[in-house]
Structure formats: C-alpha cells, structure tokens
Image 1 (cartoon, protein in one colour):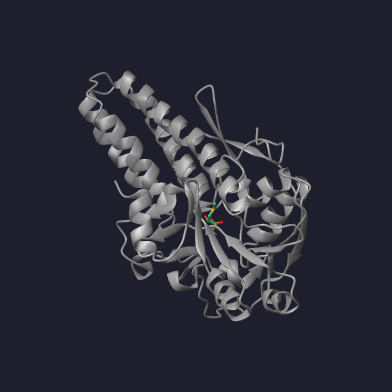
Image 2 (cartoon, rainbow, N blue to C red):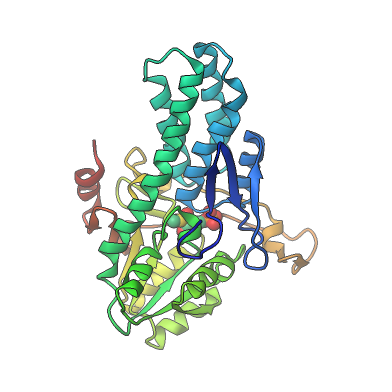
Length: 351
Ligand code: MRU
C-alpha cells in the first residue's frame, strides 16, 4: 500500500511475487499487475507501466528475483553467470535513469561477493537486497522531504514538471517530498503541475496524486509555464532527476531545461530533488549522459488519437540536460547542495 495515495504501491513484493501498479492506465484505472518473468519486467519498464528513476531501480532489483526464481538448482557458478546476464538484460530496458544500473549492480555485487556457495542461499540474499533497496528508498524520500520543506513558505507557488512523486518511488516521492512534508506541517501553498507532453506524466500522475493527498494543485499545459511565471504565481521550481552528473548537470524529463531557462529569466529559484541513488559520479558531465529516444508515435498522437500527418519526421528524446549553472540547489536526503557542485557532490556522496 502507498501511504500517499492509499492504493496499491508502485512496486509491491508479496510472498515472493512481484506487482507493479500500471501507471499507463492512471488516472482512469487502478490495476496492479503481477510480473511473471524477467521479460515482462523489462517490458513494463520499457513501456512505462513502472516509471520514475527510483521506481525503475527497485523494479529492476526485484526483476532479478523474478528472473532467477527458477535458477536455484543451478551450481553457484552458473547461478552467478545467469544473474549477470539477467542484470544486463534488464538494464537494457531504459538507458537514462542511473538508478536502474545502480540497483542491478548493487544486487549483483552483493551476491557475487558474499562467499556463499549454495544457490538457494544466494537467491535469498538477492531478494533481501532488493527488499533493502525498496525500504531504503522510503527513508530517502522522507529525508528529501525534511530538507526541502523549508524552501516552501506559506503562500508560495511551486511549479513542478513530470512526475517525481510517490508514484515514482516507494515513499513520498522526490520533487513532491518537500510538498507533502510542508503540507503535513500545515503550510499553505499552491502547486502548479506541467502536463508534460508527450506522455502526460504531470497531468495523469502528478496532479492525480497531489489532488488525492489533498494538496492545492493546478494543472497547466507545458507552454503556459512562462506566462504563469510572468504573472507572479511561481516562487519556486522543484523537479526530480534521472541522473546527476559529477559536475552537477541534471538529466530529467524532456522540457525540464526549458523550465530552468524560464526560471532563470524570471529570477525564480530552480531546485532539483535527488536521492543518492541518482547521483552518478562516474559520468563527468551532462553531455556524457545517454538520452533515451522513444517512438515517434508518442509525439504523433494524443492518447489514442493521431494528431499529426502520416510519415511526418519526428524527434522524441525522453529527457534533456539542465546545466549545473541553472540549478539553484540539489535537495538530497542528506541536505541541500549548492554550487560548486563537483566538490559538494564528492564530499557528500564520494566513497
Ligand atoms: O519517463 P519517466 O516518466 O520515467 O520520467 C520520469 C522523470 O523524468 C522523473 O522526473 C525522474 O525519473 C525522477 S522520479 C523521482
């Protein structure tokens, strides 16, 4: 159960079975779908049934448990070989959010370095590590909420883009965590949610979960952000992220860069909520982040309806990179980081 929207959790592991809340059906239908195979998990991640950086990390970790369930009779050597192959396969589902490879690597290296030589025990360890990643994420969201809530003053207007909410994590979200925490502390403020074309995560997911939780949320089309800012309704932007590079450049949902440029123009602080699992110190800067390119059909249609001519040329990058100099601060579970980011990120998250 998710405590924010009081429905089945984004990812649930019950009695050795894996379930994803199918986010492609929200807000019209609430369906929790059982995941039977690693191929089904791969497909669910690819098609955004489960989505959002922390959630796909958790989903991938449990995907290993699903994929390795019937491999427990193998020799430990073969078990480890199959585990590495399964991790590589799951990791190929989406490239931009570092949480996926982070979680898969964490589980694989835990199992590989444990020194146990019984495949059933290795499987138990694998599952326990996935559960640990799942529960840790909840506490991380709470930490981001505590640190970020101080930024939201009474009467403020907060703009967010895409969904970095409870639906994207196992807790109260990342970008939404300061909002939920400020709300719980009794602060009164308004949230503006960009609809987030082409897949409408802001309209379908963010506005849905904030509204369910009783926050004051207003949905706007992406192209309205400038005029809402110009009208003085926005005091603060908070977005999530799929990967923060070592220099502080931030990959997030396509359109985030435009919001950051607008925020700079209007003198509005632009914050990024980032769990430690999304920091990638091995990627030097934003230009090194692989940006997922998705199907043209997402752009040439609106829902099921075609809205563009046949054979039109289309670009559909799912993410963009906001340079560190446009970021006012990065809200992490350990505190808010400010420029220069390179040093601050190493100090906080370097080994
Ligand atoms: O394509 P999506 O819906 O997975 O993109 C999600 C985002 O861009 C989120 O802002 C990001 O993953 C952070 S979720 C806490």
